[in-house]
Image (cartoon, rainbow, N blue to C red; front, side, top):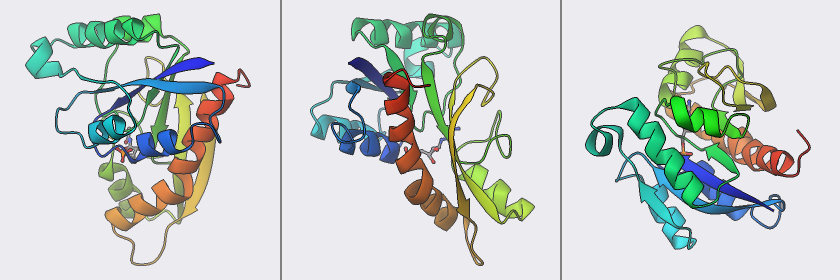
Length: 198
Ligand code: GAR
């Protein structure tokens, strides 16, 4: 059984999907802690409701804006909680250094597009769906991948396509990509990873 640490920044619907699928889809791991880089992230409430320990580590307020210190503190918390696998579930901060080195090959991210489209630095959250609509693609989706030093550049573990509909707004498209892709493939990929199948 792998210990999973989840990093969030906001609403935490992907975290909720992971919590809800524990024991059914996710059988080879369990969530042992949730860490947020924002004190107001609603995902913290979701974790508390599920009885999962939480911690807030903010780059500016707690680490003086120092990215290495930020990485060091998150890494320290993950180790303290005996985390084996880290899942970035809507984590909007970039980190490198210690966390990436210590957990190399054991950090999983969900991105709301079909990588290599609409990804990389500055492409996160609603911006991804705005870019997809601006480009006029008819199919988009979500990707679960391993994290390396290149933003959204690690090995792809799973992808699912979602149709863009006439009249979609970034918000309606974001919701459909979450419902039809993210909340399904993230728990599936986490299970496969924890089970050693990928
Ligand atoms: C999700 O759509 C996730 O894929 C995206 O942010 C949203 C977070 O929602 N992540 C990224 O854009 C990372 N580059 P949630 O907090 O409700 O899970």
